[in-house]
Amino acid sequence: KPDCELLESLNLIALGATIFIQENEKRIEGRDILTGLFNRGRFYQDIRHLTDVSRHTGQPLYLFFIDLNNFKAVNDSLGHEMGDRVLKSQAFTINRTIADYGMTYRYGGDEFCVILPGIGEQKMLELAKRIEISTEQAPGGIPVSASVGVAVSESGEEIESFIARADEKMYERKAFLKKG
Image (cartoon, rainbow, N blue to C red; front, side, top):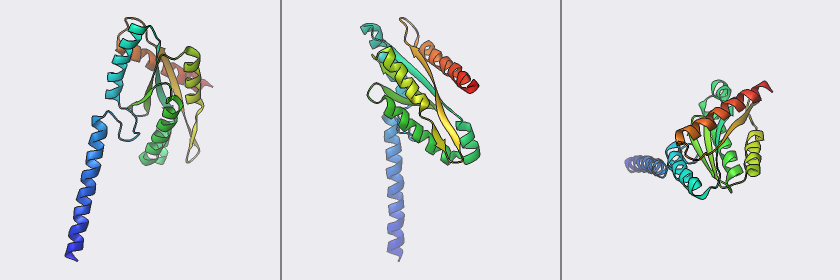
């Protein structure tokens, strides 16, 4: 029996070490642990590079700044575990929607960013609309949807200004959708 207890203890230690290593690998490669998306640090790295590429090629670079609607209600009434499930589901939906056209990042909390290099305006508008209409029904009947703010990079613009414009457009869109 002592050998079994020792073996169980060693298995638990090994499992803990494996989880720790996997989480650190995700951090190192720029992945968000909860959603598996690229993280905010990777977002800044990629947007700097892609903004430079856009300047040199003249190709448009679109940025979506996305915020989930009613997410606070899910966390407040159903708990953070359910909130995490909703975040993962929405992250999957957003990423699947744009997978062939760009990259998805978890910016923080219930905010996501999407970088879309070199696509046309019509495709960009179609993708934004598809993200906004993909409403999820959380248990308890709470609808969770997304508000998408869109910005296109402008020649000579600072990255912080580019991101701020997309963020501002997202808040404008959120207010518009709230009014119905």
